[in-house]
Image 1: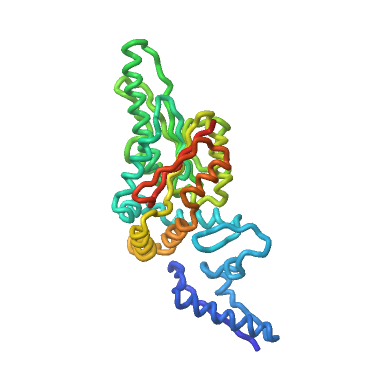
Image 2 (image 1 turned 60 degrees about the horizontal axis):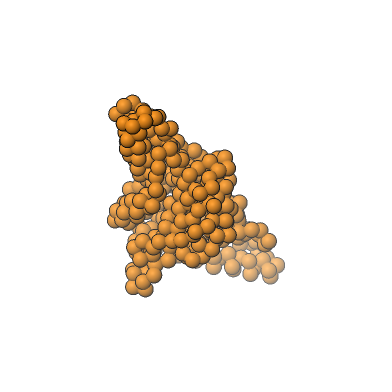
Length: 341
C-alpha cells in the first residue's frame, strides 16, 4: 500500500502561508495514519512538498534527534545550533516595524520602562556603554543623550576652572541581526546622532553599531563600563554563556543591567496580560506587520523565560555580585542588575 500526503504550495512569487490550526491537526492525523500503515508493512512516502515546506521542514517534522542538545524556541524545543538562525529570521521580518509595534503593543508604556532603565545607569563623562541586542537603538540613543549631556556639563565646569579637555565616551549598539542594525543606523542618521559636537566644537560621546553574538562578543576583556541587554536575553540560545561573556567585557566595578519581560505578580493582572498577549498581540502582528507568527513566537518566548528569582540565580552563577531586580508594571517587566567585582 502506498500513501501520500500533500501540502498546497503558494503560487510563484507569493509569500509562503503558515498552516492553520485545522490543517496542522489534519497533517498530524494523516501522518499518524501513515506511520501506523508503515509499521504494518506498508510503504511510507512523504512528498517533497512536505519536506520543503517552511513550517514542516525535515528537521521540524522529525523533531530534534535523540541525545542532541536542545533549547526553547517559543513553546517548541529545537536543536541549539538551529535557534540563532531561527531568531535571526524572526527579527529580519519584524525589523522594519519593530519600533512601531512596540508603541502599539505596549500603548507607549515601553518608553516609560526605558526611561526608568536609563535613570539607573549613573552615566559619567567618558563612559563606555555596550547595549547588546540593541538593534534599532531605542535604549542606546537615550544613553547617548544622557552621556552627551553629562559630558557637556562636566566640560563647561572644568573649562571655567582648569581648562582641561575630557575624552569623549561612547555608546556601542551590538546585535546579532544585521537587519536590526540597519534600522538603527537609519534612525541615528535621521536624528543626526552620528556626530554632535558641543557649542565649543569639542567632540561628544560617539555611537557605533557592531554585529555580534551575545554569547561570544567581538570586544576585549574589561573594555566597557556598563553592559545592557533589553528585551534580548530571552532570544539568546545559551543564557548563562551570554551572562558570562557580559561579565568578561565589563571592567572591574562595571555594571550589568537586563530589562526583560517577567512574571506578573497579581493574579487578576496576570489573567488579563495572558489573554492580551496570546489573543491580541499576534493579531496586531498580522494586521500591522503582516507577520502573525513572529509575534506568536515573541509571546511564547516570554513565557519560557526564567522568572525573577531564577534569573538572579543564573546571574550569580555567571559571577555577578550585588544582584537585585526591580519589577515594573506589576512584574510585566523586571530590571535585573549586578556588578563585576
